[in-house]
Image 1 (tube, rainbow, N blue to C red):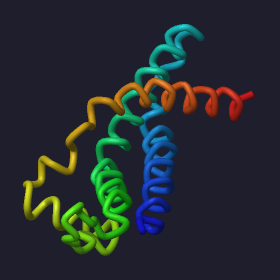
Image 2 (tube, helix red, strand yellow):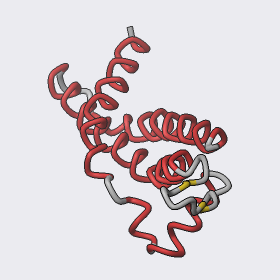
Image 3 (tube, rainbow, N blue to C red):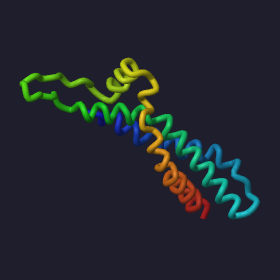
Image 4 (cartoon, rainbow, N blue to C red):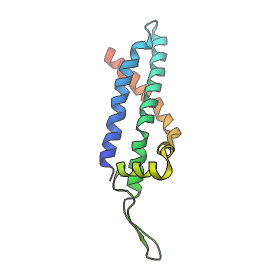
Length: 130
């Protein structure tokens, strides 16, 4: 469960990272090394936040699909069926039952990952230039 969603969640943000970073990297300026570095870090942070924000609903679907892996059996012997067939079905059910905003519930915690994403992008850019 969630394998297709996991692949999509790993590929889409990386494509957005590099595509948007290369697109907006032209505007980083070439005045001095320190100003260029800070502007690249700022652009990298914005790009990684945007990529994570756009793909966070996929992660919500993956987590929901993986949590509902097997039927739940209570102490009384009652069995509840599996709620979701996969990540896409989980996303659709969450959006329908809880509203669209529920797909981004818990996003604020991932902002910390954006710091490392921006460092990754700037490091990639520095190695590519050298």
